[in-house]
Every structure is written in C-alpha cells, then in structure tokens.
Image 1 (cartoon, rainbow, N blue to C red):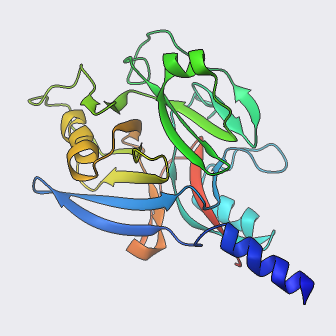
Image 2: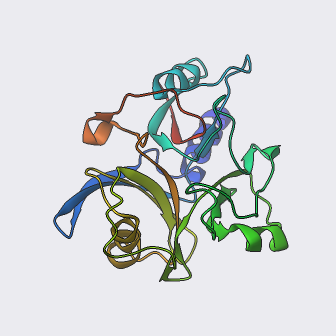
Image 3: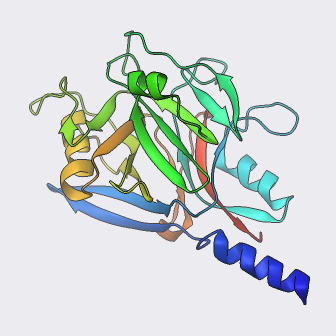
Length: 243
C-alpha cells in the first residue's frame, strides 16, 4: 500500500504525462505547437548508454522503452558540428558537456544575441548568452543556440520584415512566469521576422530562441507527426512512464 501511494504521489508531483500539441494559424501560415509545463519530465538527449549519438526519435524512444518509459513529444534542440556534437553550451543531468560560446561568429548561431534554453527542477528559461555567462544559473539541462528570436519582448534587431530568407524553422519560447515552454515548428518556410512575431504576438512570450532550420523536425503523435531526415544532434523531449 505504501509503495503504491509513493508511486501515485510521484506521478502527481511529476505533472501531467502529455504535451498539449496543436496546429495554429498566423498570418496565413500554419505552425505546430507543443506546450510543456515546468513540472513535467522534460529532458535533453544526445548520446545513448554506449556513448553513441541517438540521432533519431525512434532510438530515443527505444531506449526509454527499455526503462519502462516512452517519448511523448520531441524536436531537434540546437545546432551541431559534423560529428553531431553541440556547437555551444550543452548540459545534461547537471553535467556540462560543451562550453558556452559568447563571441560573434558565422551563421545563425553567431548572429548575436544568441541564447540558452535552461530548464529542470521546476524552472524553464530562455536567457541571452552573455547574460547567462554573467549570472551562471544552475541548469539541470541546457542547450545553446541562436539567434534569439525575442529578447525581453523585442524582436532580434537583425530581423527584416521584407527578408527573402525562407526556411522551415523551429524554436522554443518561455512564458513570463517561467512555467510554460512553447515548442514551435513552422509547417511552411517562414522568415525569421514572422517566426519571431509568432512567438511574441500570438503566443505572448517575452523570450524565445531559434533552434534550427531546414533539418527542423517534430515528434508529436497527437498531431500524427514523426518527422524523418538526417541524423540529429541534441534533441529535447518529454518523457512519461509506460511504453
């Protein structure tokens, strides 16, 4: 009886075991959105128990199944090198496996300001990288990417409303109270400016971070999504008990 009560209490404390995923329209384009709360079992995934890159949603789910759990929702969560190692900061279960990068550089990652998605132990945050370096918050999980999409309610200053750079894009935004994360992927190619405005104007988040484009992928059974493509680097995913 005592063990059963402990298990039941643990499930309650862990929060609901599902992501709220839905399709949303914004300015004649569609976006897939999965909403996760700070009390849920959100994790980052990179390597399996043998030190090999997971690379796919299926391999992550299989590893979880072996532990009596399953993947509820997932998406790629940051840029990576040819060996699929993270480009910037990467923390998994409190262990820092790649360092923070604060200098300007090539590509989208180096289009400052970039940022860090930091979460775990009841907190969710998107933090600009140089502020992250100054404040050094404790993160059970963290992944760095760039550019920032929304910074304290303002769009990234380099985004142009009339840009002709269109891509499938994905990213994450966090609510002002730090209790809800919105994971978004565009269903059609979109500009940075419109993608950022979706987070700010439609979802109402003050801070949002770009994860990637072109290779952007989503695992969301609620929406019939299990996207395929080249092997991935870091992946963010929601875990629930049972297989």
